[in-house]
Length: 430
Image 1 (cartoon, rainbow, N blue to C red):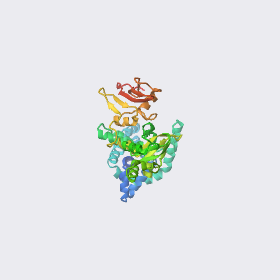
Image 2: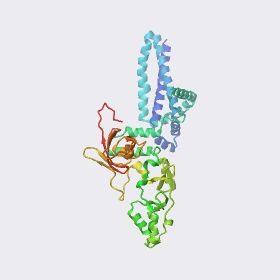
Image 3: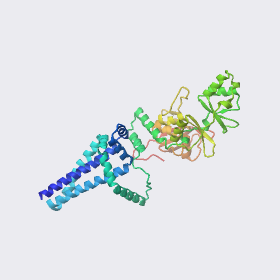
Image 4: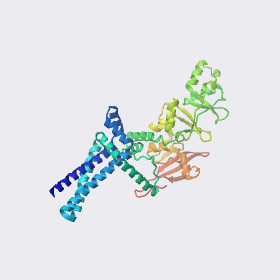
């Protein structure tokens, strides 16, 4: 009998050690820095390479570790229960449940997890080869479990695709940024910049473009001297040029090319042939993702593009600076206007120009206004009101009161926004 007890104790210790290994391996892989592992791989670490390969397919590796962990814990509890029932009878099952819960919690859960989280890269490198072997052995079981889980979810109406990844680097970065969000100005700016980088794939050119009503353009039918004066007075270095009607854009005039031509003409604007100075315009669709447009700017080595809709009509323009401002915030120089279109009043409200983008308000004031259906604040008010309101009309939605202060023709030019303070146990009005 004593040999059976000794064998049972030895088996329980081995199973608890196996469970601890699986727990530590799972926590280490989840907490490990890919950047640090990649750096170690460049130094020639084969184990770091194995750890990175495990992170490439986290569902398979984590699934195998979970299966082994649960199996080891259940087996240890089963051995302890059977042994104590033989020793003390029916009450042994309860004693085994209490004792094994404490032992598993301390030695197979808390201790290995704390160690792995404290030294994630060290843990990942140490267990990499072993986990790859275990994952390969348990691959059929893990695949069967994945198929069963997805089939069960589909029975309940869940839309589960085969290409969905459980662990998303983009989601992890955004979650980490939100988790460490603080009210200090520099921390909020860093979070906004990180969020701007992550949002590039989700945004389209139409979300940040300068609308055609704000575009500064040149009429090629003007006299050469007036064209030169218009370029000198403009704060922009690139300006669209049209002929006949504003929608007929024939090219882009760069101030540097104009000044070079003016120098060659010895200062005589009448000798400049603007047809040779302007360059062809680059047209891009308004539905193009910002990330793709940024890569296109870098690839073409240009900073300026005109935006067209599905019918080929010019909607506005987008520049490389506009995309960079989505990441780092407003970039101001000595030629930019000082006003940002937002002014805070003494009563805590904000007087905002209707053309101010909603994303800029959310980033600057830490609001959560939706920007899926409208790009500007005026567009949001019109969308929610289902009408074009007149000056003096007010609406409440998304936890704010919006009062139209000024209107020019059918365009809302100025809005007063006041946050509605709600009791803690009430939801904001929708």
